[in-house]
Amino acid sequence: MHDITELPAWERLFKKIVWKQLGNIEGKKILDFGSGEGITANHFAKKNNVTAIEPSEEMLTNAWKDYEYSQIVGDVNALDTFNDDTFDVIICHNVLEYIDDKEAVVKALARVLKKDGILSIAKHNRAGRVMQMAVLLDEFEKANALLDGENSTASKFGTIRYYEDEDILKWEPGLKIIEVFGIRTFWDLQQNQEKHGNEEWQDKMMQLEMRVAQSPEYRSVAFFHHLLLTK
Image (cartoon, rainbow, N blue to C red):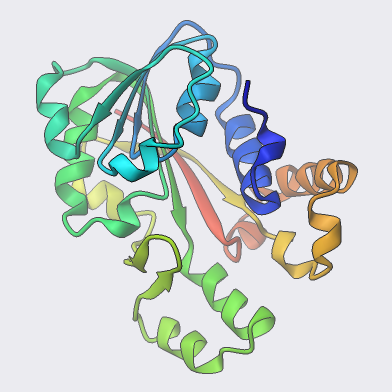
């Protein structure tokens, strides 16, 4: 049985925050699009009917599957096999940044989302990345490039193609944003790495992060945004 403490400290906190922001979900039909190693799919499969889609077979070699869920190896084309209005909840976390045709993916996800269902999108926030480069990494050239609208890179997945929260509504006008949360507003400002993995410290940091997650002034500089949308 896998345990969340197996994850790197930053990822553990990220997952705990985004799951808490999604709330208690039971008895729902869930799609995890871009499911990676299946950590989120596995988490929700305990009490829900979960389908996961992931294009990378390499990622799936280490997939978490303590609870039963359906795993599809594929990309956006795999959604063609599903009827309209199939899923109560669709999860798409840190995926769109690495896709060229974001509009096609968002439209496809909206099609299979039930009326009044929830689409959960977690995404990089450009302002937070600028903060990271300028304050934490002393990468002034990269900070200025980001401010000029250029992309950046992630060590594991390649180029991060930033987009704004409101772009999602341009790609699919049938969606509407019902909530935007910030994630990792304070976490990276604490540079003592030994503290990051301490469970007591993580609990206190999570409480603080949750407290400011919906405050516009803090959310604007969070490293990630978590959007809940419906149609």
